[in-house]
Length: 274
Ligand SMILES: [Zn+2]
Image (cartoon, rainbow, N blue to C red):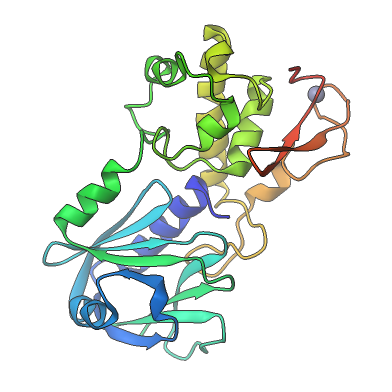
């Protein structure tokens, strides 16, 4: 599932290719249920003729700012991708939305699992989406002190806490497992039991694993593609994620796979004691 670095990569790729272009209309839509708001007719009418002013990311949402105060918000969920293709690129059975641009190219939303979602938001809708999400972990607002306050007094285990989008935005299974390994913290440790020194290490690890992955264009598992339709490069550098049974690169012990909060979780029991 695309997380912060993957969505950031897609947003940057779309900005580079589509900023300043006008969406002439919906060329293909075979799964109207993906449009959460407004209704299909309102979406088609509302998006046609709108110039794309900017594309950015909030949490795991791609946000395209359109002329006239509207924002096209896309969540890739499990398997979605947003790619700009030339006019002659074929629409396959997994392509559920195609937006035509005024220069002949087209933005494809492709989604094998069909969990992806699209919204066309006014200012109030955008503010509501923003309010549902916590601090951006790569923003200036995410300081060690802010992170310490998020952890303070919480009996929640640290992994589900880090996955809670209302507290910290954009983290998912991959980068939480990686950051916890770097900081040597067991994923089931209660948040309040994480010591100040460990919290500082975890704060740094979160920023480091995210930044490194963005530099490499995100991590490709299954369906993730960047805004040019290419795979990311970060998946080769995981320390623990999907490495169950392999030796830990720090201590040589075997990495274990366990389930925490219904999520497959990868941990080095030696480096990350309970
Ligand atoms: Zn280890």
